[in-house]
Image (cartoon, rainbow, N blue to C red; front, side, top):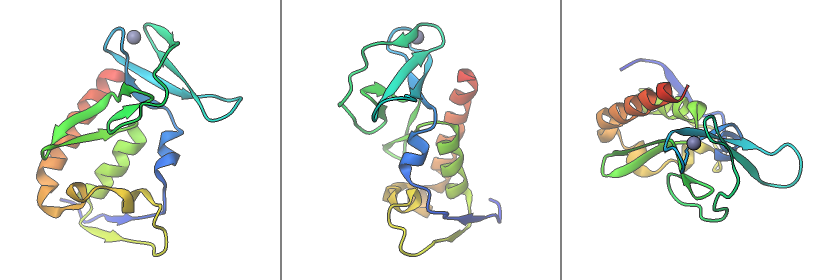
Length: 145
Ligand SMILES: [Zn+2]
């Protein structure tokens, strides 16, 4: 355990979502990427390094551990729950949060990602298992890159 301080800078979940999201390609079951559309309205182009652009993601079926109806690449069972992350930045954020022994909170920022983390992640008693879960996701990240 480190003595680093966790600083809640008010980052919102969408700040992470809008960066590259790693998904599991439904064709080759390897790591693909969700890329934000430059033009147009809210929407994404999903792409796999091997299969190219995935033309027909199931837009609208959002759920825990999924992105546009596809499984996130970074997901693993942990503490009888599903631990997941959109991408490396999201994983780094949770790693920092979980492994910080001292937490700073900025008041009146209820939308911040830290305040939206589920209780089982915030719970100190799950810290050891969460650290193992984060390590598993880091291994998956290395396969992807
Ligand atoms: Zn693929």
